[in-house]
Amino acid sequence: MSEPSMTLNNPAQDGIREQDLILHVQSGQSELFYELVRPYERRVYAAALAILRNEQDAEDAAQEAMLKAFAKIRQFRAEARFSTWLIQITVNEALMRRRRERTVPMEGLDNRRDAGDNESEYAPRDFADWREIPSEALERKEVRQRLAEALATLDRKYREVFVLRDMEHLNIQETAEALGITVASVKTRLLRARLMLRDLLAAGWEQGWFSRLPFEKGNKPW
Amino acid sequence: MVNHVVSCEEVWREVSNYVDGELDAGLRSLMDEHLRTCKRCASVLAGARNVVQLYGDERMLEVPAGFSRRLEKRLEKRLTQDAAVKGSRWSSWSAWLVPVAAMALIAGSLLLTNSLTHWHFVRSQHAEPAYKIPPDLVVVVSSGAKLFHVPGCPFIHDKASERTMTAKEAMQEGYVPCTRCLRKYLQTGLSGHSVTEVAESGEEEEREETLSMAGR
Image (cartoon, rainbow over all chains, first blue to last red; front, side, top):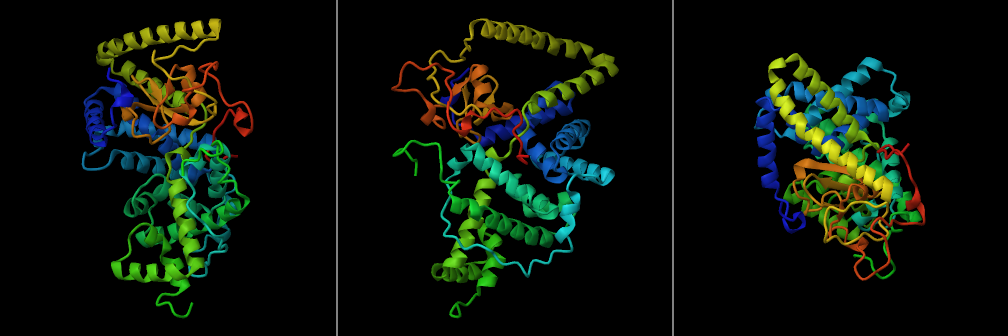
């Protein structure tokens, strides 16, 4: 086995390997299915959580979505992206569960501002002097938790679009198809979600919790 | 800002498209002109960019502890049921189960060794020990490899078999830190620390059972 740290990861090779795995699973080598979906398990869970908001429900939905993907694997066509196909199955599963149960906690709060996509009245609240937050900040659990908490406060329709577009990296069209809304709605909700998160995080920026990083004095990488 | 060709409200309306690079060149250059002189709008743009960059990072995709194991178990159960139904496939299943059982035996004996000696086996004999690494740092490992990495590190070998876990779990499984993405936690130049030494103070000492995206 070659030394992994000496070998640059090659996305093209990853893609070929994924195509091989898909073909093998489609031709009956079921035991390879977990290997195929394992790189996407975090994305699948995040998509389910964005819709269901409850960790246990999200985990159940994520598992069920994986099983459905396995059952439908022969329907997958090579021209699609496997990750997008898997996320779409997950979103369908989560939306179906939400419709069926209609008792998702805090769902009532979601409806506060759910009347249409009226974005015109929105104006940014905070004009703090932002500069780039280094991604190393994310090594702090506190920072990740604050970001997750801010996201959880967004209304459902903004949260779902934001997670699919900015965290799952679906494109605008794919996000619209997955959620069954128009491209224009995706764009307006995405704008609103990004600006609301910006406002919510501005307080943290001013309190300095992005900048308290786990580096020794004089050893900052920027 | 009366001198601007585009107003602040127009900039706010288009800031998302600006970040995504979806504006035509004309509007983009008008916005650039506005942003050069309007501190408020520059602040809105910088904030929106930070949001996209931070949330777009793989480290924001956290799963509850044990998620991977439970998922694998459920898939296995389903596959076993399928195999039982389709008796004709049993021969290929048994061929697969033998190495899995062998691996389980090996893993079991290693765990036993660990529990008896309080020593974690290390996959690489040339490992550089970790020093004060936060135990709950989210890392990824892949099968057949020896190193653990920060998610997204370009040196991850066999990305298709990636698994997510905490640094503590990775070290318990014998993985050692990547010399590129985790360089700051390597023990080079230091001595007298155990390979499993982890950060001892501050919030990083927290031992939460569940890492949740919602953080609740």
